[in-house]
Length: 322
Image (tube, rainbow, N blue to C red):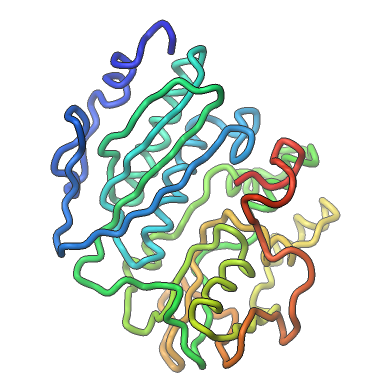
């Protein structure tokens, strides 16, 4: 980085990139220009800090780049919007190897393309540690946004995507288990795979509330329950995952805890109107009722509900990086 310099690096990052239709003006001017066809846009931002949210000895730069985009794209899709553009701010030490930056860039563009968007611009600064901040924009395409506040009594709670696998991958890394035996779980932790199409290709007026599972199923459903003024009860048998339980047995761990509070899978969980048919890719896991809070089989869960940024130990000490 020190030898190449800022502006040469910016040119290296952007050379040959093709912008998605939602980006009207990409890198090269004072600001980018992003389309807002129906007069609104969804926007979100998230930051990843080295050794807090990722570790370079655990994940490749490509993986980290994909993860940075995926967790932001999932937030946009969780509002019922199509990702249209990303803006990335990158801080890194001057002695950062160029292949690290190349890998980050490759991963970001790959995941942006998978989400149907592109990287419209950003910023580059010198910093003590590697820091990635992503801002994502989304197009609602003249539909109402799907918020956490729309759950209704009688709704079916359903999930699209897998739960607990990222937490399993983290457990493997922190315990030093033989990685070759658990490649699938490691991949799930290093690169989340939000099922964007399961939401965007099945949008319906029957989908009343929605969020992505980033902090843990209990925590994220707790946000829906609070915002909607309802209670949510989960069916533990519907959350059963034989493959994950087999993996947990090898690690002397609790698969149910991974599923309920692991987080970072970026699956989507929402509530669908009573009696509506769930689209392909969605599985029922519970029911909305009158009251407040989240229960499992009618009982308040014990232990942690999920991640909170300013509680617990740093990831370098063995807790889950966020």
